[in-house]
Length: 460
Image (cartoon, rainbow, N blue to C red; front, side):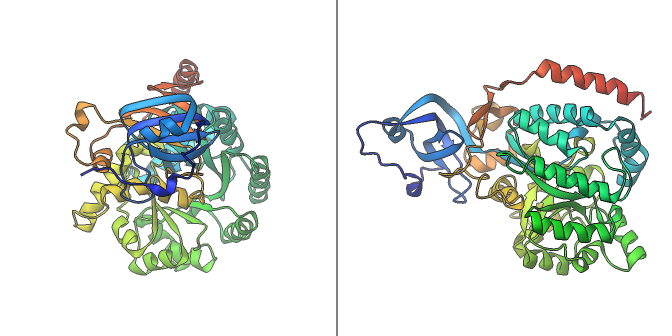
């Protein structure tokens, strides 16, 4: 049952002064789920925001005497949660949503996705795809994306333009693309892009080697050294399918994970995506090294890639985060749907109804996702001093009634259409379901134009 919980450590502002403190925003919610501390649900609480930071979380009655906000937002039927974090996405690929469905991974990639990409990819494609993704993510309560695609300079510029938080991968792959022709050029452009966003308050970078089967040992060795020097993560697909593992064993005599161990990549910088084919030893090695694993259940199901042993990873102490993958293989950016699927699938795989419980599912899309990105000191929970990345979810809809357990209802019954308001770094990006400062008709017109162009390139 949800019930009032005291939260004394957030009341760090003196309340005995005569004059209330001025703040930019005071959000008053029926419930607040801060995620940290775990399992806490606060009733009738407010979150005070000054500039881009959370000042305090305290009871509404106390907040009204403590603060004089420039804007008061009253959410009497809502739960306020940390903004959701999509820890693995290829968001320019929103423009290929539904292009080649119901196909296995390598057929999907080699016969459809890569050939189309080769003909359309460029800064304009990336910009327009990311804009469509931003609109979709905001309307689903997502405030941060871990991006992995070509033209990261255009990706980062688009996120910056719209005030959306993102980690953008610096791509490395073994064959020429429109982004870079040689291995040296991939690394030169990676350095330039990293420098361009070095001091950006919302945009971070990570190395993005595609996968062991598309990246050489030499490139991985360079990535390991540079990631340490630049103090950034390494974000790659790993053990996505049994076929990938079998092919690497035929080629090198090693499993892909073993190959990366040999190259020094299995460490606390690694964001390993998919991980559907794992031995107990590999799970233990991830826990010992501090690897973060990103579970993408709906994409893995759709491509029949296999089942990530999410509950085994959790029990071993591995940091598990959640991602959608790209919309060409999902086919949406719905983190509420992803939490639900992840929880249900993990129970079936573990043969344990208590596995991957609702509270843990929410953590994989918030604080554990932030930890994977190295951002858990800034985002992922509602705590004083952190960035004000927040989402308000209306729970009065008939689909979420009656209401017994707040967090369970968020994970098992709530739809993204119930997200009404979103803030990133204290700035409102969604207000009563309306996108703020975004040209939605323009986004849709450009999307339709890309649809016509892409449809002419692929007969599926």
